[in-house]
Image 1 (cartoon, helix red, strand yellow):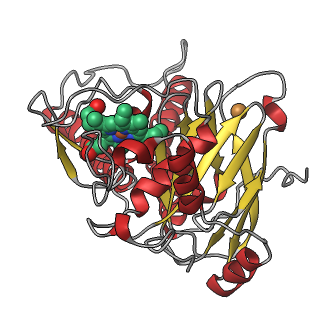
Image 2 (cartoon, helix red, strand yellow):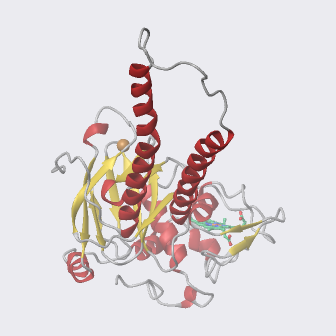
Image 3 (tube, helix red, strand yellow):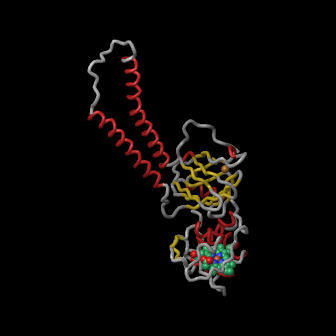
Length: 326
Ligand code: HEC
Ligand SMILES: [Cu+2]
């Protein structure tokens, strides 16, 4: 496994990363601007007023309201600017744009597995197209890991039992480091690999080098039949179960009167803990699939439910609603 050599300052591969760098350097500048005069005064006064020096000690000033207001107020305002700047950058990280390319990441000791929507899989490498927002939906098969892309200045914990997400838009093709940033066992330090940003053309060519016969959603559809989900959720089923067509990303009214957004986490929870969030108007007859479906298969099932775009999708031929890799 080829790891990038240690760098003093990692390359940056997105506008966001460059803005983080600007923030860091500006803040460093401000801290120097505030600290250097204090240290200089400290040194000068320590020498000037050392014991035994003949400096003038008569009539010492005891108060200077304006000076005190200035040295309190100005640094306060200057650092407050950074609060808003940093909060803006941080919050932008929580609102992915619409129409992201969603890639699933499943971590385990000691590797990261990535699954692209077209069904292409890679281990300890992540290939993404430049200039397109990418959203990672991540989970862990064992302990807590952390997905770290230094070139994007982004890091997100990857947790067992739930999905965390990370979105970015890389703009500089190249090969960068991919690291695990959470101590996760004896081989943690070697966990990671390469993060490869490709031009959209090269990304399409890279996807085409795989011989996959099914997209992620199509694999999910096969599972959906094999596990018996379609027996209840299918159009011709006798059990009374909600149609899953078109629920993805939409508000779902629940039996307890609350409303949740049917995101990846919701679909995952619905499969593993169906009694926890029961759909309004339905009896809680769905069995739990806890312990029966591995993380990678869950990712596929979730991709399948997401691909059921609208109410007519269930009648469509297999895979018809699947987004082709762009
Ligand atoms: C025995 C029938 C049955 C089987 C088998 C079944 N389900 Fe369900 N499912 C239901 C019922 C009934 C509900 C609505 C009540 C609830 O939320 O528990 C439901 C709810 C759901 C929901 C939430 C739907 C919504 O509209 O918010 C999802 C997602 C789901 N099931 C997925 C699956 C998947 C995936 C499988 C196969 C691994 C599966 N189900 C197997 C009966 C079933
Ligand atoms: Cu790890």
